[in-house]
Image 1 (spheres, one colour):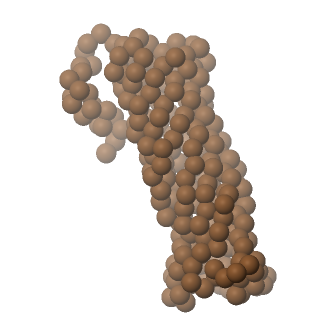
Image 2 (spheres, helix red, strand yellow; image 1 turned 90 degrees about the horizontal axis):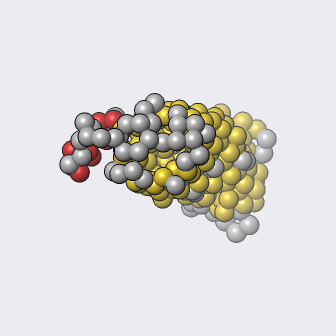
Image 3 (tube, helix red, strand yellow; image 1 turned 90 degrees about the vertical axis):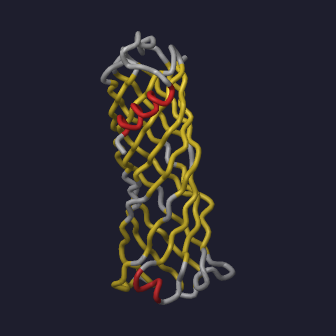
Length: 226
């Protein structure tokens, strides 16, 4: 469902009206702090697995989704333009697919992901009760606490490391005013995240595989202006 439709439904539920006097407009110097629940939903694509430096010719991993809390902070440079920093982390399992799943690899990696993202936003109607915006910016993704998983690769001494990633990010969303300071937020982002996993100490020796994770991040939450 489109974010604007969700916002309109919420307004009806709360008994608010868009024809009423609008809440106080955003102004230059405002800080907007939002707490969201987000779903990180990878739009993943796997490279081929290299074993001992040789290309196996077989693709075969996917990344599961995760739902977590998130904090973001926006500074309004003008009443229309703001800069948003998104903070939070998620946890994901990388699973074997296709040929490698048929070989019984199962899950292959568990990892935590820290993806701070900075976007420049344009707010279309800062004087309205419903305030849509779009944004674009840059993401840095750091993988940590990586562990080898699964019935085949997870043996004593097995290790895995995932490369950090730089990529672009795009977003669209809407703030729905509850009063002068409080609002409900709906947001979606697309983040370009590419990494390469490096295995060592596994039954197949050294191995590596590239993966494009490229998640859509769907969020809903509540915010306050300061």
